[in-house]
Length: 98
Image 1 (cartoon, helix red, strand yellow):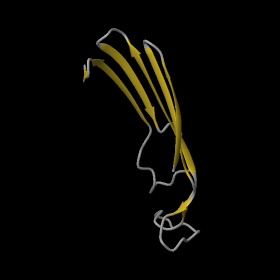
Image 2 (cartoon, one colour):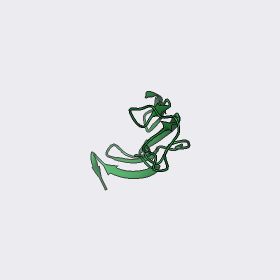
Image 3 (cartoon, rainbow, N blue to C red):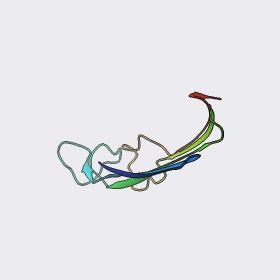
Image 4 (cartoon, rainbow, N blue to C red):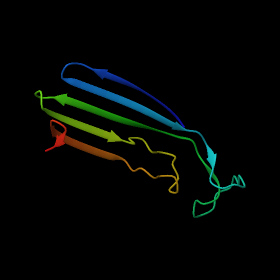
């Protein structure tokens, strides 16, 4: 798996994008190319996904954060899809969620 990302930070704003790429691989030790119906045997195609996050610092102790994880999950077999697309919001006061 290869990962790369970029982050932008200013006094009140922070944005980050991270890309993850996983090359094609085999689901079993025999390296069978032809898949089975239950996704236990066969080749798992390569896939790429992105994570985005942002934060706005409203005051010294209050911030609003948003995260979008696994925004592109095309070409992932059901057996390998361990992370589903997610959207999270956090309103924080200091280090605690409100």
